[in-house]
Image (cartoon, rainbow, N blue to C red):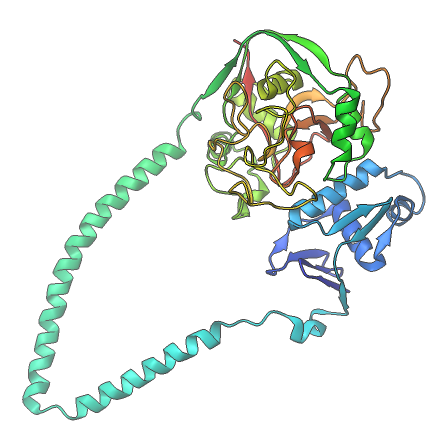
Length: 432
C-alpha cells in the first residue's frame, strides 16, 4: 500500500518514506510504524497505538514515547503532519491511498527535462543544416584558405589556454594545500567563554512551568514542563563553555582523526554546511568528542547559567519573547519559520540566542546535550515524570523547529543516550 500526502509518500511494502520531492527520509523504527498506522487509521488514541504496537501487552508505550515518535516524524518531514489534540493522534492533511506506484500514474510529478532540452536540440539541428548549406556555396579558393585559418586559430587558442591552465593549476594546487591543511588541523579552534563563579537562579516556579505548558507548541505534556520545578539558587565555581555550538567542520576533524562514525545527516544538504552545527550526534558521540578535546559536556546547571545569567530571566535576552532574537520555529504550532533569517540551522557564529555572557545560539538553533541524567531536581517534592530515573540524558535550549516555550533555558527534556535527531547538537565545557 502507498499513502500519498502533500508532504510525504509512504510505501508500506518497501517500508520507506519519501518527501514531496521523492527524496528518501531517514524515518525508521517506531516513528515509521506510528506514521504508517495513522495513515491507515486516520486517528488513534494511546490505547489504540499500544494495541497496534504490542498486541500481547508486554510493553506499555506511554504518552512520552508516542510524543517522541510524533516529534521525530514532524522534525524529519519538516511539517506538522502528525497532530495531537484532545488525546487523539491524527494525520494533519489529506491522505490518498494507492495499491502500487503504478497506480499513482498521472498523479506522479512529471519530469520537464526533455521538454526543456527539445528547443535547444532543434536549434542545434537548424544551425547544422545552415552550416552545410553555407559550405556548399564556397569556392575552391575559400575552401583552401578557411581550413588554414582554422588551424592557425586552433594553435593560437592552445597556446593561450595552455598558459591559462598553468596558472589555474597553480591556484588549484594552492587551494587544495590550504584545504588539506584545514582538514588535518590537529584540533578545532578553542573559543571558550569564562562563566564566573557565583550563585544563579535555576529552574522554574510552578506558575512559570504551567504558563509555558499552556503556550506549548511541540506536543509536550504538562508533566514535562513541571520537570523544571522548582526554581532554586545554585552555587557554581568558575568554568568555561564553548562560545559556539560544535560545527560540522569541527566534528569532521574529530571523525578524520579518530575514525569515529560520521553522522548520517551529513548527506542532508540542508544541514551539512561546514559552519552549521553538527546534528544527528547522540549523547555518546558528544561525550566522545568533548573527551577527545580534553573537555567534557557541561552539567545542566552550568549550561543553564551560561544561557540565562544569574537573575532567573526566562530567555537569554530577558523576560519578553522576541522572535528576532533567536533561530526558532513557529510560535503557535510545530513547523519551520524563516522570519529569523533561517529555515534550518543557522551558522554557529550567528549573533542569535546570545546569553548575558556572550554565548551564541544557546537558545534555539539546535537542542544541546548536557552531562546530567534526566531526574527530578533535588528539591522537587511535588511532581514526577515518567522518564525520570531511567538513565535518559537531558537536552536543553530548543531548536529551529520549536516555538517560544522550548526556547527557554529552563526547559529540559530526557532522551536515551543513543538518541539522534535532526535538531540535536552540543557544545563542550571545562574547568578552570
